[in-house]
Amino acid sequence: MRKITANVYMTLDGRGAFPEYPGSDRPSPEISALFRHLWYDRFDDVTTVVMGRRSFLGHQRTWSEKALKPGEPNWLLDYRRYLDRVEKECLSHRLESTDWENSRILSGDLAEILAKLRREKGGNIMLEGGPAVVREGLRRNLADDYWFFVMPVLYGKGPRYWGRLERQT
Image 1: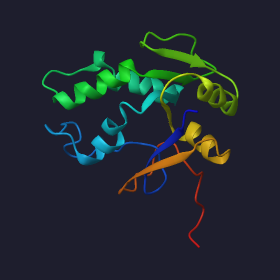
Image 2: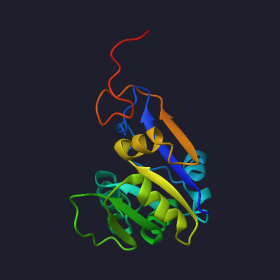
Image 3: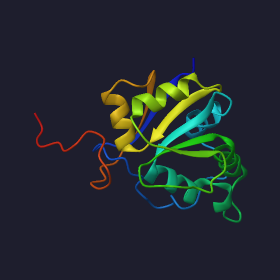
Image 4: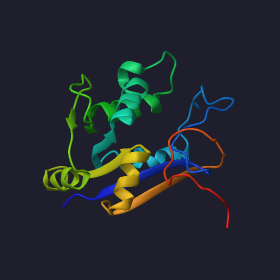
């Protein structure tokens, strides 16, 4: 049976956003050890990526091979090609169609969708879907394991993973 891993990318204040910082618009000519571990080491293992609508559209706009920018390092092209060829499941009640290759739009109960995907042939599944989807997976214990990547910044905006923190105790 296929294993499901939920990826949690967040800032120290629990935001599922990627803050821009000086130099973030210029990728390194060499792949970082972190990026290699989070993605490249999983190319053969993960054959399906599950995302919410906003995450799916953002990934398509930013990371598909069609979004390639002149002069980008080769390691980014490899990542773009991986995302184009992997099976992408977009969870949406609003989106009706997509032109991103190897993509399906699914709606319904997350547990039922993931159970069906587990039974299909293929490699492991990554629940990448953005804070709302990943939070639901966490709440309902739908993943086999969880990968947390915490960016060491307080961002103060963007979708939250945990809800509002009222006070420190």
